[in-house]
Figure: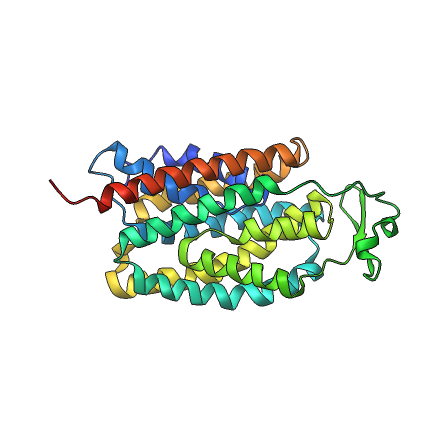
Length: 300
C-alpha cells in the first residue's frame, strides 16, 4: 500500500469539508464522485470500488462533521431539542441502508446508477425551493403557518438572539428523513440534503441555527452508517478493504475544513449556495450516468 500517492487529497478534503459544513450538506456527496469519477482519470494505479468509495467517504465525513460540530457547539448555534425527532428516525434507518450496501457491494453499475439517479433527482429539488417569506425575528407570530407551535429562543455565544417556532417533522417530513437516512447508509448521500430544507424552508429556522443543527443530526447518522459499513467491509474483505492510504489524508483535511466552514457561515447568501450545490449535483449525476451507460455497452 503506497502511503504517498494520495497526498493531493489533503487540500481537496479541506475544500470539500468547508463547503459541506458551510452549506449543511453531507461531505460524501462530493467525496464519492471524486473517488469514483476523478480517480480513474488519474490512471489504473488509482483503483477504488464504489462500495469502498462510499465507505471511505462516510468514514471521512464523520471526522469532518465532528470538527464542524465542535465549532458550531462553541458558537452555541445547535438546537439539540429540535434535532432529536430527526435523529430518532435517521439513525436506525441509516443502519438498514448500510447493511444493504454490504449485500450490493459487488454490483458496481447498480450502485453507480443509483447514485446518478439520486444526484439528478436532488438537483431540481434544491433549485425549486423558494426562499421562505420574510419573518420578523422578534415576532415569529406573524407566520400564520406556525401559529400553534411554541416559540424557541436561542442565544449564541456572541449574544445574537434567534427567535423561531419549534420545528416539526410531521409524517411527510419523517418520510423524507427516513429516505435521506436510508440513502445515506446505502450511497453516502441524502441526510443533509433533506434536513436543511425541512428546517429552513418548511420550519423557517434561521439559516445559522439550521446549518448547525443539521450538522449535529448528520454526524450521528454518519457515525451509525459508517460503523456499520466499515464493519461489514472489513468482515468480508479484510482490513485492506478500506483505502487507508486515502483516509490518512482526507481525515486531517476534513478536520481543518470542519473549522473553516462555520467560520465562513453567513458570508455567502444561502440561495447562492443552494444553486451552486444543485448545479454541481446535476453535473455529477450526468457524469455518473454516462459512466454507467458506457459500462452497459457490450465489449468490442
